[in-house]
Image 1 (tube, rainbow over the protein chains, first blue to last red):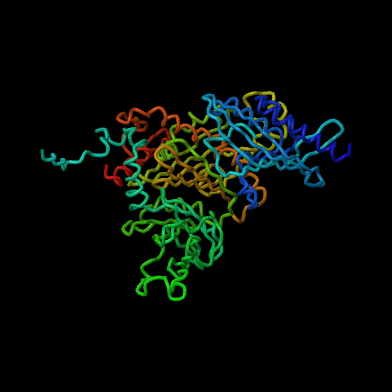
Image 2 (image 1 turned 135 degrees about the vertical axis):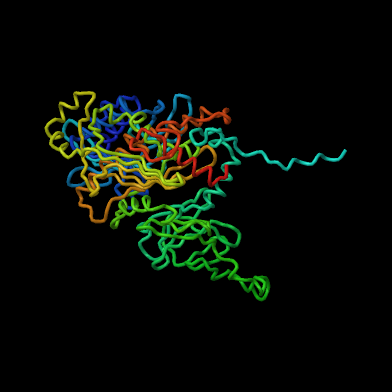
Length: 158
Length: 417
C-alpha cells in the first residue's frame, strides 16, 4: 500500500467516525475530532464561492464546539430529530503548510420524531487535516451547503 | 322559478373582535382570501418595500432579484441611479432575470429575445419585420407602450426601497423621523457585505413579523443567556412604535463584555467541566460602536423588513410570504468597509447568535409553526395581546406587546378590516 492510499484510508476512517459520532447523538465527543484551535464553519456554497465569510456556525477552537453542544443540550428549543450522514468521494486535493486538504461529498437526511424525512443538507466537506503517528484531526472543517436555505433551523452540527 | 337575487350586503372578510388590536383572530394566519388581499393592499399598496442594498450592486449594470410579496422584482444600477422593475418580460410574461444577481447592459428575454434598456424601454424585438416580408409585428405596433413594469424607487443611505404605489408619501415621510434616523445611524458609512442565507418557515409570514416585534418573548423562548448566567444587566431600553403602528424599534443598552478575552484564556478548562458556563465567551466579546451606547436594536419597517443590531452582529432581514402557510426569511449580514480584521472576526463570532443556527434566534424559526399547526381548525378564535396594555404607546419596558399591537393597527388600516 502506498503512503497516499494509507493517508486516504486514515481520513476516510476519521470522517466515518466523525459522522458516526453525530448520527449516534454522541455529540459530547464531537469537539475531539478537531485540533485544540480547530476552525469549524457551516456556510453556503453561494457565500463560499463569493468569498464571503458569513456562516451558520462559526466556531474557532474546541471550547466553542463544546459550547455549541452545551447550548443544544441545555438551552435551545427545537423539535427532536435525527441526522443520517451519507458521505462519498473522499479525496486528497493537496498538501498545505499546515496539513492535508481533503474534499468529501456529504448528504444529511433529517428524520423528525413524527417520521417526516427530509434531505436537509447536501454539499462538500472542505477539510484541512493534520496527522500524527496516533491520530488524524480536523484543523479546519468548512461545511459548504449547496443550498442557501435552511428548513426551519439548524442546531445539530453537520 | 326565477333565481333569487344575491344579497348586496357583503360579509366582512374577518370578524375582528371588539377589543381591537389586543386580539388577533387566527383566521388572518390561514385565509387565502386575506392573503390575496394582502398582496393587493399591502405589497402592492401604499407602502415602501426594501429590495436591496446599493452595495449589492456596486457597478453599472449590476442587478439583484428579489420579491415584493409574491411579485418577483429586479433591482439594477443604471449608471448611477437604482431602478426596480417587475422581473417579467412585457411580451409573454417570462421571467427576465433568471440569476439572482449578475451584470447586464440590457435586459433580453430568453424566450423570444425581446430586449429592453436599463430604463425598461423596449428596444428590440426579434424578427420584428418578419422573414422575407412574411410575419413580424404589425407596422403600427407601439414600442413605447410595451415597457417593463417600473416601480417608484427611493434610496435611504444605501437602502433601496420600491413601491407599486403612486400615492404613498416619499420614503422619509412614510418612515417618519425616528425610523429614518435609526436607519441613518446604522448606515452611517459604507458597508461591507459578509454574506447571506435564507430560512424557510412553515407558518404564515405575519407570525414571524409578530415574533420580531415581540420583545416580551426574548428571554423566555431564547434560554441561551439565562441558562449560561450571562450578564444581561439592562441599563436602559424601550419599545418605540411609529404613529401608524407599523414600524417599531426595540432597543437597549447592556453592559459590554470586554473582559471576556482574559477569562477565556484563564478559565477555559475549568469552565468546560461546568455544565452551566460557556467554555469560550468570545462568542460574546463585543465593543461599543455607536456613540449613543445602544447595544441592541431591532427595528421593523412595515410590513416585513427588519434592521438588526445585536451587539456587533449587524444584519437585514426580509420576510417573504410563500403562500398562506409558509414563508422565507432572507438574512443579509454586514459590517463596515473600514472594519479591522479583528472587528470582522468578532462580528463573525457573534453571528453564532443569529440566523437559523443562532443561539438566540433559532427558536424563532419553529415557534411560528407551533402556532400554525395548533390553530388549524379555530379560525374564529383569537390571540391575546395585553402585555404592556392595550394600546400602542411607547413603552419604557420591553415586557410589552405594544409593537405587535401596532402592527395589527397598521395592518387593519391598510387592509380596511
